[in-house]
Amino acid sequence: MIPKGKAGNKLKITVLAGGISHERDISLKSGRRVADALTDFGAEVVIREPDNELLSNIKKDKPDVIFPCLHGASGEDGALRDVLTLSGVPFVGATASGSRLAWDKSIAKVLVSRDGIQTPASITLPKDTFRELDAEGVLKAVTSSIALPVVVKPARSGSAQGVSIVKTQNELNRAMIDAYVYCDVAIIEKYIEGTELAISVIDLGAGPIALPPVEIEPRDGKYGYHERYIAGEANFYVPARVKPQVNEEAAKIAIRAHEILGLRHISRIDMIVDKKGVCWFLEANVAPGLTETSLVPQAIAASGNTLGEVYYSLAEAAKRNL
Image (cartoon, rainbow, N blue to C red; front, side, top):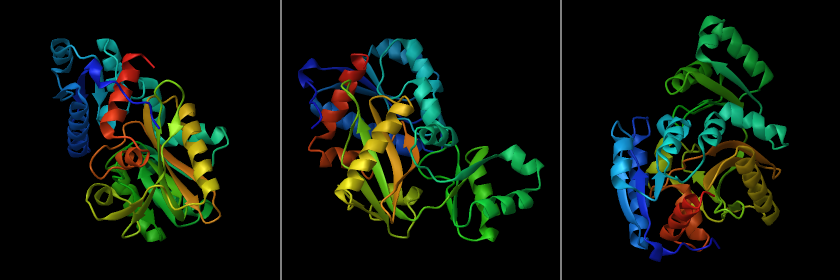
């Protein structure tokens, strides 16, 4: 169980939602859900956009805590969190440095692999390098080293935007173009067939704990943008239908990745469990979706807590500078 917040404290909380990233609509939904849960639990909540009036609004609102629900670059690349630090108001979630490490999937993979965590073989290709060299020759060299199928994805993006599963050489060039729409750096990663898990990690100051794992079973075999946010496009199982020892190992990996990347308060670690029961780290999310179809709320419910309890406890932890 997660320690319960004390609603009697009546915290004033500013929820940040919206922004200008490709994930603006999802951010607005997350922010509304968080604000509703916090209000139901007794907090005094206002929702604000991260716009040119943000700092003046913070001064005017005088919140005890800021709860960012910003997805995509505007909320996860660390820049906004630097600004929030300058405001002097504590905020929920990763610091600027932790955000930068996790936001770039290629960097996160290197850091966790150095600690012995398995992550699929990959190559990172900046757009300029891909364009200036013999693109066709580069892709042939890649697939001779990393056998098809592969996953192509932007190095810095969320909600599975620009992600493709590539099964043939002819599909690879199109997948690269799709990835570059969202980021000027793309990752080509070995596709691991198996069970997709999302492990939510909560840390209220006494050390990170892993919530029950969520197993994702997309109807068409790919957990993409639509499957994430349209009800009925994927089946979810909480806790995941994996052996107890796999569940335990996945939790350990999620907690360790959270620590390695210097994350704080809340994160979601995504991984694949292959047919042999080996857990493969895919990526870390510093601002995971908190919509009605998102994974973290499902894990919270399965842990025996309410959303209001957990979100309020996170705000209290932030206020205590934990």
